[in-house]
Image 1 (tube, rainbow, N blue to C red):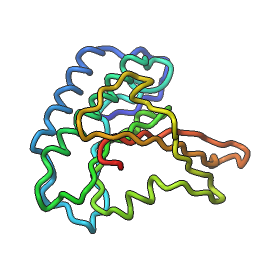
Image 2: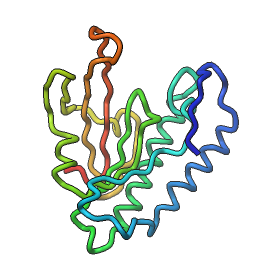
Image 3: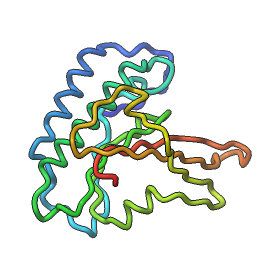
Image 4: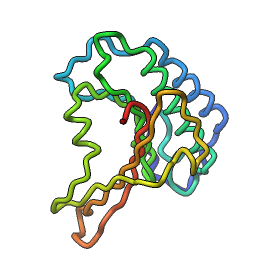
Length: 179
């Protein structure tokens, strides 16, 4: 279950139980590919089902973040393996966002053009997107990438809503059918 928490100082309880639940969620993707997706849908996603404080903020630990990232990659792999013939052109991708890991998800891109827009470097008034060449979150965090799973990192810089001098930087790491 995804839940927001407005008290970032509150200790997250039941870490082992929550990780066990997340492991079950990731393993349940075998044969779960949505049958009714079309190119017109462009995009379908499964958000990581955890508490916000579990993966980001003062109470989140790197060990928990690493395990959550690995489980997202595992779920993505299971979806890739369960793709039917009529969906072979669709891309299945696990997106791991840093530092805002609560927004991480497993995505199915049914429209290739829409996927390319998400990863293309661009500059405009709102900010820029830069591909992260030479870095690997998998190497930095010790993530295991199954056969057929590729990695692509994108750094996003965009302006805050309230203050024009406030800029926000986020890394979005794509794992799966990204190349």
